[in-house]
Each structure stands twice: as C-alpha cells, then as structure tokens.
Image 1 (tube, helix red, strand yellow):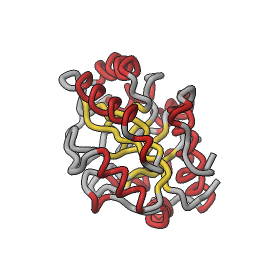
Image 2: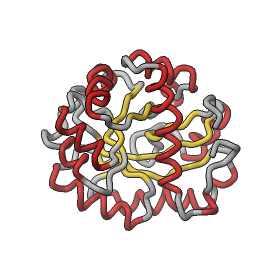
Image 3: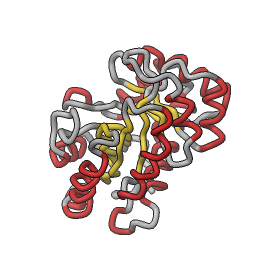
Image 4: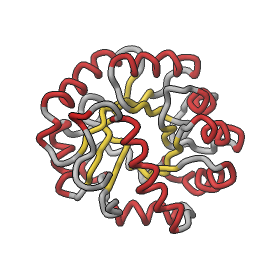
Length: 235
C-alpha cells in the first residue's frame, strides 16, 4: 500500500456549498496524487433525494474516466438528532456509499445530541469534526464502527487535540479529512500528516488514520461494486 496515496473522505461540490463540479474536484485531486475521494455534500430531508440523483448518476456514468476512485457520499448537516437514523437509512436506500454526520463542532450551532445520535446509528460511517466529543460517545463510536474525524478545516480543527486524546482513550477509529469546499482547501498527504501529528497523534496513529483506516472505509463503501474498485495498486 502506497502511503503517499491520499484518501479524503469529506469534500463538497457545488451540489451543496462547494465551489467545484465533481469532475473538477476529481481532476484537481488526481493532479495532487490522490487515489480516492468521497464527495459528501450537505443534505437534510429537503434535498437528499435530488442530491443522490445528481451525484450517483455522475459516479455511474463519468467517474470511471479518472484515476481517482470516487466514493459517492453525503453529509447529514444540522438535522435534529432524531432525524439522523431515518435519513441515514434513506441515504443508503438511495445508493450513497458513505454516510457522514456533521458533528458538534464548536464553530457552528449544531443541535446538542447530534454526536450521540450519530455514533449510535448503524448506517453512519464518519462523525465529522465532533468537537468536544465525550469519552462515552467515543466508546460508542468504537463499538459501532463509526470513525471520528481529524480535520484540516479552519474553525472545526480547534478541537482536533481533544478528539485525538479521546479516541486514544477509547480505541475509536480516526481519519484525517479536509472538509473541502474550494480548491485551496485540498491538501496532499504530507500536509495531512502534519495535521495528524499536530493533533497529537503518534507516527503509528497518524499512519493508521491516513492509510489503514481511510482505505478500510473506502473498501467497505465500494464492496460488491466491481466497476468501482480501488484504482492503482493500493489495495
């Protein structure tokens, strides 16, 4: 497995509040040496079905032209905790391969209880920028296979150190994402490693977050979809 092959599981296109088309995103990360990218546009009950129609159509018809493996995903954002499980189930039914929940970052007024509802939901893969996540919530994430995010995004990243410490205490899985909205947000693997180490991860923990855990989530997301297998030799 090539440790220089970047995997980012949290990015936005102009289907929500990102600046780029999916094709532009894929071409830019292709040039940066990425091997997998999840496009995870913001969604709630108002746009989930329409977003699936747009992104999954692109995944099925056009994404194979790029050397980067695309994972079609969604970020459930600012929804009430009670909505997370039914919306996550609906996202799976619509064909999304990765479900992210917008966690309780101190940078935004996220509903209290969002972190707990996300880590209890069997359909959720990643809890993004989880802020001051509790040890109990992180333990549930570890038990239920929900990864916690270390993020490079300004504002959300002020609690990276706390997230790293709590994950270490509980054995929760970590991944390093950008929450990209514009081209300047994209980072290469070397920069992602700096973000991981800056959060207080050891070299071993950083390697797990950047490589092992990230590729495991990609493999799980695309299992039983042979037309969209991991590209390159990083299997």
